[in-house]
Image 1 (tube, rainbow, N blue to C red):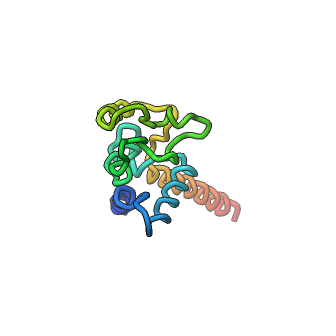
Image 2 (image 1 turned 120 degrees about the vertical axis):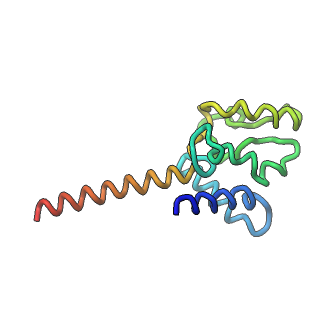
Image 3 (image 1 turned 90 degrees about the horizontal axis):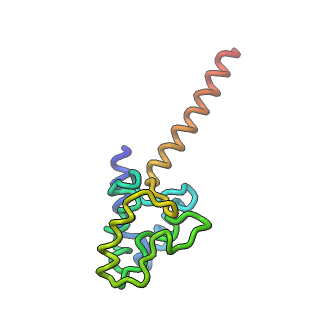
Length: 141
């Protein structure tokens, strides 16, 4: 089930994010999720192809001319300059496309964990709280 969800999320992100009329809700939901969960992309960590790096295969990234941002602003940590997060201003389109690979190391201004990973972690945390509560109740009975 997790793999199906991952595939669906990747398809929505790469094909529908910020692609005009009819997709505003998709864009808003992705931005809210990335901001609230402090995540970027779908799944994986800083070196994963489906975490923040998936944005480079999205229609959103491809339609920028010249390439201005490597990731949406919602992938950027608060209180940091957007330039530190992945804006490629003052580069030609070719330079930007060549240089974005240097962002595949740990990046202090960018959320690098995929959103599905954050969701799964939260579910596991909630489950542990519920299980702990049930065990406590059962031992008191």
